Length: 296
Ligand SMILES: Cc1cc2nc3c(=O)[nH]c(=O)nc-3n(C[C@H](O)[C@H](O)[C@H](O)COP(=O)(O)OP(=O)(O)OC[C@H]3O[C@@H](n4cnc5c(N)ncnc54)[C@H](O)[C@@H]3O)c2cc1C
Image (cartoon, rainbow, N blue to C red; front, side):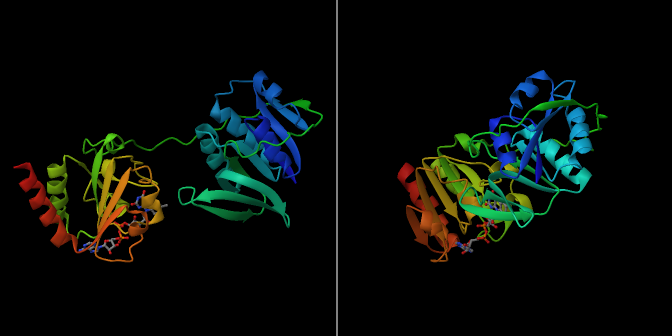
């Protein structure tokens, strides 16, 4: 296979060399030095920050290569997604292991908040980004022949419109106590129970994804988990939350996890320091009453 290292550095070059011959694209002189060890260095004279220019260069060169390898930076991921759809390539991000199997690129990536590893096989062309610190082997020792190219810059996609995000004025990342609600709550109005409990505890209210993303009962700044906010309170009280891996990924730094769930087999109990197997509609009003009695 032939691989093209973009935003070249030692890790990107080493990863590209695991696929076969490793060439590099260098935009600007500093990248020519960083590409030392590549078989061929395709030099573009221009501003390394010009994403459109780099996209034009990758699109021009990509047809000569089986794979394009980049670091997992924000710019590289933006560029990678764009170029992959332009050339009809598979796009793999945050790859942690790489090789060739039966003419296909074989890659591994962390999934479910780094709790599992997924294996992927993709036929060329493939565009991929590598996770930092995973490709620390010896970079290739290619000739480094410099070839100048003058690609046409490509127009980058722009957002059609930008909407302000709905905010409930909550900063869960800083909260010391969180009362968090899940689909165990049957109606939006019932969340008043959780807000009353949170008030009694002086806590913030968090939620699982369905409550914010699907039902839209709370704004997204209440959303806890892998794709929501990662929290680290002294107490995380999960009410009517099943404890799926994507939710757990956001709460593991909590000092104490407590859970209320009517299902004794709910996965949340595997992570909870304290658990109550009970209908939330019975237990939460009792808790609120007890707390207000204690305050008197
Ligand atoms: C790519 C991806 C990213 C995701 N990211 C996130 C994320 O960031 N955060 C997140 O939360 N999820 C995320 N999810 C969704 C996740 O997989 C689960 O679907 C979600 O966490 C489930 O939410 P839940 O626990 O509220 O609902 P459910 O799984 O439906 O659980 C409801 C729980 O309530 C209990 N219950 C029902 N009635 C009562 C009652 N009366 N009293 C007490 N308990 C009761 C049930 O026993 C059940 O355990 C993601 C999924 C994907 C695919």
